[in-house]
Image (cartoon, rainbow over all chains, first blue to last red):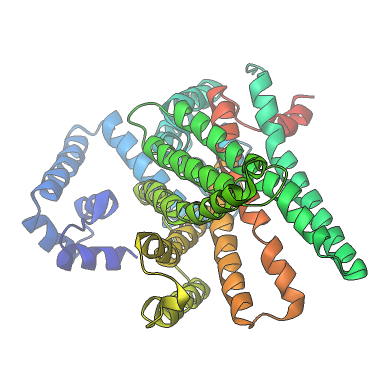
Amino acid sequence: MRRARAWASRWIPGVHPGIELLALRAEGVRHRAVDAHVRRCRKCRHEADLIAAARSRRCATEVPGDLFENLQLGIRAWCSLSGVGDAATDGAPAARAELSDAMETYFGKEAARRIRGCIRSEAPEARLAPATRPLFNSFLGRRAADALVSRIAGATSP
Amino acid sequence: MSYSLSSAAERRVSKLPRIILISVALLLAAGVAARAAWWRTGDEAWLRLFFSYPGALFFIACSALEVWLSFRCWREFSAGDLLRPAWLLIMVSAALQLAGGLLNQIFGLDSRLNPLTRLEPRRAHDLIAASARLGQLFGPFYMAFLACGLLYVLKACRRNGILGRLRSIDLALLALVVIYTANYFATVVFAPEHGGRVLGPATIISWSSDPLLCVLLFQAILIRRSLANMGLGLVSRCWLSFTAAIFLTSVGDIGLWAWSRGYLPQALVMASWYVWFLPSAAFALGPAYQLLAMLRAARGEIRLEAAAAPAAR
């Protein structure tokens, strides 16, 4: 799927590689099609520069910047939900978690399983809740998503 | 941990899916009873009675419920939310479906529910025929608005990385509906006599319903692949209800065409008439699940009350 998207971004006008491929590119996973697109597209070049800057800032200071951590967490949650992350393939039972329960109530068991894998590998559930906010925002609206995410964050914060 | 208790409105909405499903089951049971009475007595008045009263009222009630629930869903979203325009378009689509249903099922039928039957007989006959003709024109418009609304849902799926992919079975199903549409166009639209219909704006509008149904089915399958992958949560159930409604509308449409051509075995003729109640119910179920999800989320409910109660104990 990633390869198809990269290929499409090279040859089909208006198709962009997306944040996942740009983040992978920043981490050193090079793809000629993505490189070609980034050379051509100003918007993606700007996004790639931002990701690269955040990454280099983090490497330089050796302090995990919240922004970068949250971005990584967001990407991981996004990948888990779309079924491309490693966490989704982990089938071992996990502890009952507020976020995965909310995912099960509103989206279903599979979504809960995927996010549970993400929680286990990333540990801080309270920080993962905002990363899943876009999904709740999209399908339930900002008002409901805010109430839900703050409830999850409140229930899981130490 | 405690969160506010469900409101009276939420409790009412939470009962709706069950009420809709029980109603459609009772209606189908009544339909089967009417069919049995027709078969035993040979009097088709039983069947006419069923479709003119409980059947017609069910269509109208489901459409009215869909309008009201879609309006509530639209209002629950804030300005700028991705799916707010989708629910506005779905509400308009439901309102058009309701208007078409009123013209077709109430004003277009010679029944006691129709106030036009109290007019002078000749005038009543003309008006009833005009209502039935006008009612058919709403179909393509409601489909067009629904297709626009579902585009936003696909956009939301894509943005959140959950957009699914079509499988071979989906492509086969789509191919079946496209072949049916192509056949309809070849034998009616491009035929010299246009299937015996007078060529006018109304006829041309009515022809667009089959291509629109193809678009809707494509969207519905893609939404099903995207959200069914997530499970059967409240939001997923909402969009799966719309998917089921569109799929069943296609089945009903093909069934009517097959019946009119004499391709349908006698045993399936009645099924092709009754199947129309199912999409009607499914269209009302969708916004009911969405509204329930939004009300519960706004209260910060993480797990369903029924599931949370034993855990709390």
